[in-house]
Amino acid sequence: MIGGTQRCVHKLCEPLWEGSFHCLSPIPTRKELFMRVMMMVMFLVGWFPFTFFAETSHGKELELIAIGVRGAMNFQDAGLPPGEKEDFEQFDVFGIMGLPWSWEYPSGWEMRWRLNGSVGALRGASDEVGFITTLTPGLAFTKKAWRLTLDVGGGGALLSDWEFGRQDIGGPFQFIGHGGISFHLPMNLVAGYRFHHMSDATIYGNNNRGVDLHMLELSYSFEK
Image (cartoon, helix red, strand yellow):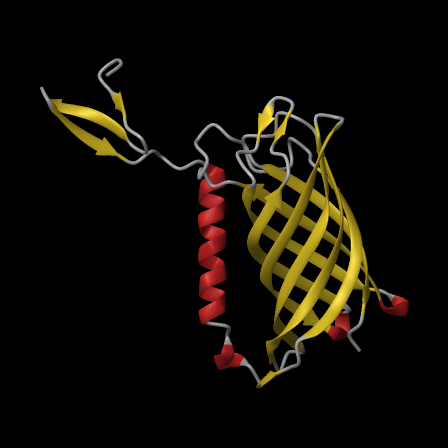
């Protein structure tokens, strides 16, 4: 016991009387709250996909929607606090699979489940480079008349290295949450921006920091 408190494995214990302790769960950080909210949103959207308002609900074939490349970097003042201790960059190739479930609406919007995957390199602290691969299911909202797609998703990542200079990300597995906007260009090209959050959600302890990246991407779409 230090200063009237005792540290447990996962909780903070405060003395009630001699020989007795009352344990309180630690207050979650903003990044922990973000991940919890993201997982809750994915759960709710998954179970209640606005089918009551859909004009048609139908199954599509499992198909490759797009392949592309993207690059990303962090900005310490444009992410979830606390900011990163090091500068990070990420470069990867990605693919998007369209899943069979989709809904169309009278307003012209289409909602569809997708599966996003990527492989690439994560560089931090100027010259330390590690391998990263991600797999994230998500939802895409497309309005063809506007040539616009909005998407949100969450999943996991595997890293070959998680210590970059002064920053310890935590461990080989990380949770991913992302949201993006894409514009459909001529010649089946698609340009987009994505906010990409990665953290361990404290599964490796409370002293680790995640990474928030701002991604620019260019892809080729196979959709008609």
